[in-house]
Image 1 (cartoon, rainbow, N blue to C red):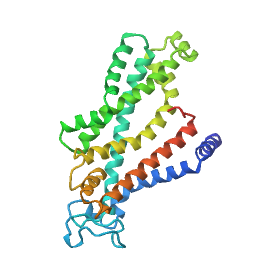
Image 2 (cartoon, rainbow, N blue to C red):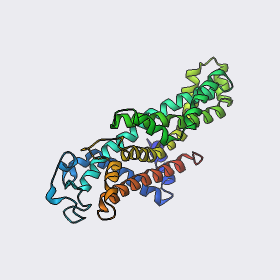
Image 3 (tube, rainbow, N blue to C red):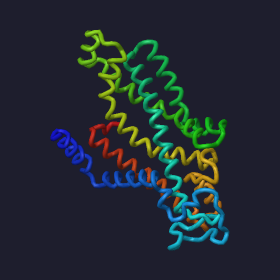
Image 4 (cartoon, rainbow, N blue to C red):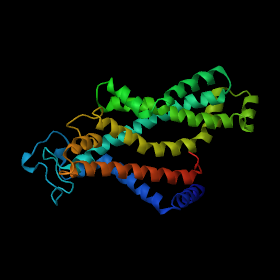
Length: 286
């Protein structure tokens, strides 16, 4: 127990060397809490779904509506917080699918470097990497029904190659390490070596990348939503709120500015949090 407590203290001291990474942690924790309980604490929960109040439509920020109201009279603050749940779910699900798939592909190729399986897997990976990620995601989402699940699928398809490339590099460098060679000489099979010898040495790099990627996935999801390929009305989505609001700039500036600021703060929080994790785990090269 004492060793665990000491390890946690040392990890925290290393993470909090820079005060700005603590700010990132606070932003991430706040975002996650709002994603979980936000719908229950917003001032106008009924405004998150189908709701119309033309009497209070297009109201500028005030005490009653700190972020103003939209064309339908819905409270923008409530809708922004109401969109956090799906935003968070998208990031978590995309990364939790992309990371294992990319890891398996990358490690299988890296451990068998120079063999046919390496050539096949990494050439497939290179094909996906050669296509601009946003173009690939838009192309996939455009042929599917526009909804949250299909937008997650589109992002996942273009995200796994980055994890494959990362794990390939790590596995390629570890395959000649003494402990891997000794495991092979002892008769250990490839699954044992991959999951017991190579995986633990990949975890720090993978965890850092997963943390940093949360912000990028959120931006990608907002981009698809902005293009009308994500969550559909009347459900709130940050990208679609910005898309609808730009038509009324600069008069009704609050339609666009506050959802855009929410994206900026969330992405900044995850980037700062990821930097802290990188410093703590010593993976500055990710």
